[in-house]
Length: 326
Length: 189
Image (cartoon, rainbow over all chains, first blue to last red; front, top):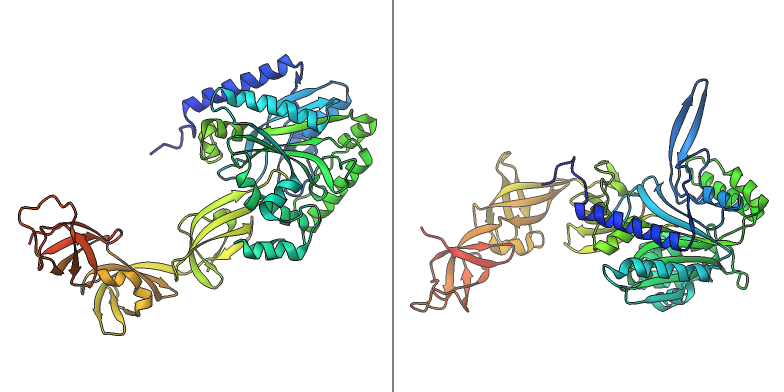
């Protein structure tokens, strides 16, 4: 029986993490991508209704501010891009309240990088290069797969992910051991996609291979740009290895007006759902107004990457101290 | 009864689902990076024993189920019901064969067992892990065989049939593991 003072992971896992960080830094050094640090504590926070944040009080004499622990370094990094820093990367802690499980710890490590002038497809090439090289030493991947969201969804469910047909979705759920989805998702297309994709598609993606799913349905665009040729899809990519979601990338939205509109929409959703109040990042909007260069960016969960490299069953096995022991 | 939210679901928790008492076996937090959080829960229906998987939106809750597992003494079978007694309160409970289920073949009068009560009514019976029962019928033993290889069927006083080594004889007492239905040893009297 382990004592509560002891680390959740083995000493080997500490070495593995250190080695991974060194290899990532070497990779970006060779490509002349600049390493940056941005604040973990900020006056504003992302508006995504599916992300819960931690907030804290900043006490100054006669003055108190509410500060937020960042759910991702995205906004601050984009402001650096506008300032003209060129391509950048960061290895940073991110915080998401309420997320705890075999693949989740409320505090976790992200590798996030932005490539100025890259299309999403070019970024995917670089992602594949990095991931394949990181795995090569431990358990070489059998390959790299690229598939559109619509095609993979069709393959596993027979449903059209881009065009929501409530009756088809219900019929599929009822005959595929997921009857609760009908009451759970109602007429919410995005919710249906989350449930069906995570239960019926994701577990089969990337069998000892890197699987990159691109062209997400427009209702799941987050901070990605809507595709120039097909308004039903968004230029967003997700990475999977052995059914584990590893990262999420975008051809970044540069339009300040649309970004502001998405913030407002998400704030309205939060209010409707009685979620905690957020402070919108006006500085990001101001930066976008000044002009974000065309770029693509991606965030990869390093803890999950370590889980896959070490074949760990739980995120606790590769964290020095998981939340239960922190 | 208290209610429990998905973050409190853990193995062993007894909850009500679709009007039946259930026990949680496994609870997995599932959340796409940019999407809704769910809990994929494996649950055993305590009345039917059936295991199902069910997905909940994180934060949903289920009412707790009033389940008590109690050590009792098996008294007797009156042909229609089997009767059990709580050794502390001397309160008696009766169960039909549907509720007793497979446990019935291991129950001998006066033996201890565990009875599961839902709202104070029995819904299941679990025999002791090891029981000692008399063989009432088996083929004659083979002289000199002590290896236990092969074996033969033996009918026990409660009606259960187990495989025993060839040297074991009718009228002998044997010890059986009720979880696997396997012969453990002879019992010296």
